Length: 363
Ligand code: HEM
Image (cartoon, rainbow, N blue to C red; front, side, top):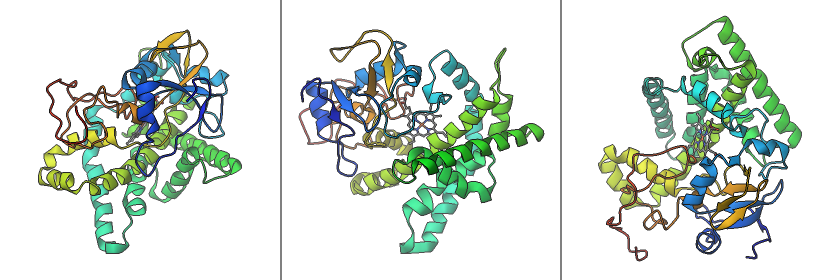
């Protein structure tokens, strides 16, 4: 592929397989030119180390996207006040405030409620028998129910919630006018929820966010609305998609599934491997703009140029993961980047003596 000729992106792929182009790019051209459906051409980083660099180095900015024709999958740009468009120190401030509502204790308190919702949905599927549908009966209602309950959304409003969240994500389901209308409805709904919490304070996630403050600051009304919409939109489709994909991948690996069923304590480790192995989508993260010239993968990215990161490709980097194209629910090496660069697992760094159990390639 000529260096300056942007390739049409995303690359096509079969089901959950990654395009074989990624392996070639990681080897031969770790930073290549791409053109998404909307916005200006960009660089694409496909290797693990480069992914972490672009996502965590302060010489790369998300906020610069506001002044540019951001490369993107959808016609509309990222909302100007979304968490995902901020740089430090604003981003750090909001994340710090939000984390006060997502303490380990809060999450642990939620565990039995989430387990109960999941068990009820699974029971419903068992009752339906062969008519049960994993997507509509479990994968979609689980995150919508959990996030709605977290936010205190009444049960009867959850259908609307679902539609509004999809309007942020789907590239095909709604016209531009419909999607804009749904996004405005979600914002108005969130404003109502917040106002109700201010009038009737209660001990839940929104109550925590309303109260969250550091020494001199608290979340503004607008920041709160955006944060709540971000939690709904960020948490809904991702979780629904990956529940379905993970089940598919497990069924396609019956021996590993049987071993997992025989030892349920291994589920947390298995989830980490599924996060590494199963691409969330065929696309990339949001664009990062270089604020100065930065060398990435042997290429100088000029100040003002956007770089996209292929997380699924980074998670299959041969220099980091042994037999990366093999699902191995017992794998314990290097932290995957399925959630971006900020998330780390307890996995140990790859050790040279790690023995691959699979006959796929010389390790
Ligand atoms: C399988 C599940 C999930 C996956 C694979 C996933 C993946 C990601 C990735 C890759 C990013 C960073 C994108 C970038 O840097 O360009 C991100 C950001 C984010 N996700 Fe998720 N996510 C998942 C579930 C959730 C859930 C359940 C929530 C909330 C309830 C959530 C809320 C967010 C938020 C608020 C951000 C923006 C964070 C920030 O800018 O600091 N995600 N997610």
